[in-house]
Length: 272
Image (cartoon, rainbow, N blue to C red; front, side):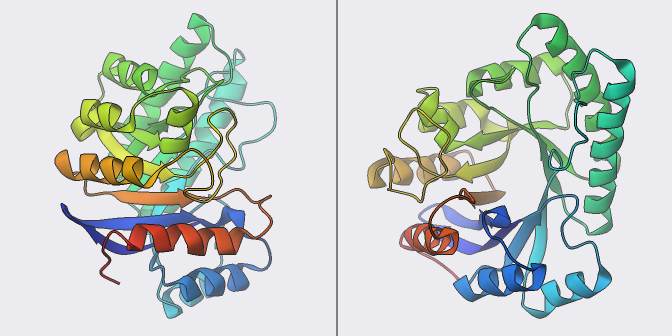
């Protein structure tokens, strides 16, 4: 789950989000905690908040759906790049169901993870699946994003942008993760400017430059200057989508990590 409010930097207003799968407990408690931080938008997984009562409570505490993380809950042993056609069909069905859920809630952004296998044949199978899903999402007026992910089929931002370009589909976008870029040693400013209108979503988190730790901002190698330059780059390309704080559920106090990181973003100038 991700929650957000409107934050203004020098270049305009953006939606600041926070992935709440960092939090445990009842769905009601998660919503209460996130709303208490001052967040106003929520992104979630295909199996989150499926009851009418819980979605009504979401609205009651002032949270609005923003983005669907479709990869969560994928059946074991199936993937969009599976060798077995039946397994690929299962993965497609799971993702299409997630997109349908997003569409019913008028969520206009969603994202996929890359495949686990790095060989060319696997990437071809992944491309076939992604193209089908891009068509499907487009019919629902949902932007479909792909997240670059070290150690997977698309480990860098540049690899992912090249893949999106190779697919040639107008409804495929990049999910940029600043923590992943720290691991792949890519400049956030350079890759954001390279992505331009193909940037569809952003994750903000921190780490030690080696592992995907999802620490609070400034707890690792991320500096205030680099974060400011990253936000300025988003303004430069006129990015108008969410920027999501993604904290790890194994942190000692995930809610405190969310509060700290949200406060850092608000320090650049907020309109809450």
